[in-house]
Image (cartoon, rainbow, N blue to C red; front, side):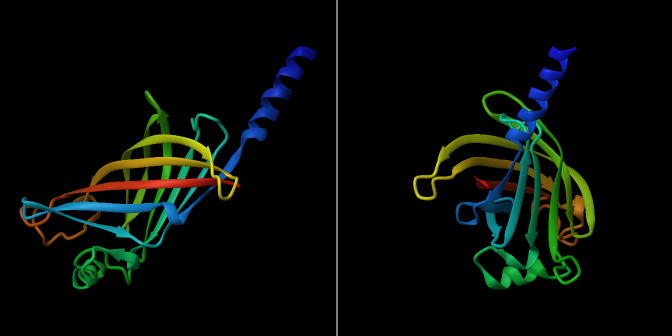
Amino acid sequence: MKNLVLTLTLIFASVFTFAQKLTLDPNHAKLQFEVTHMTISNVDGEFKKFDVKLENTQSDFFDAKFTVTADINSIDTGIEKRDEHLKSPDFFDAKKYPSLKFVTTSFVKGNNNNYTLTGNLTLHGVTKPVTLNVKYNGNVVNPMSKKKTYGFTVTGSFKRSDFSLGSNFPEAVLSDAVQISSNLEFVAE
């Protein structure tokens, strides 16, 4: 019985010892997207204002939970007129739906530091499950801050039609598939 109590105590203590909250380093992070225009070229953009919370208790991120929020009004495609159109009711309707949110529902480890991330994306007043690919790029001690820093690359796609984005624009003009690419660095608190 003493061995069982000791073992459970050690397991419990190790979980709380490793439990950590990681803070996004906004200077080394991007939340980007890309769509195909008229089937012949790609248009990309990003959200300039976003945050990602990452919490986990396992050293291999087995139980990682990502919570992403982005300010729709910070959308930037490099062309102001297009950005204003994307903020309009034709697309994101930023006045009515000023943010997007993604919350993890599962995080499954694959091979070679690759994970499958599934979560609920809330966009344009609609919440749907979305599955993304995550590559854990490793960690280092930042020589400037002396803090442990973790790197991830997130890729995947979702259908804009699932969120009623640009419903008046057929796929021949604007692809239904929206590609997502995000490079993220987190600092251990």
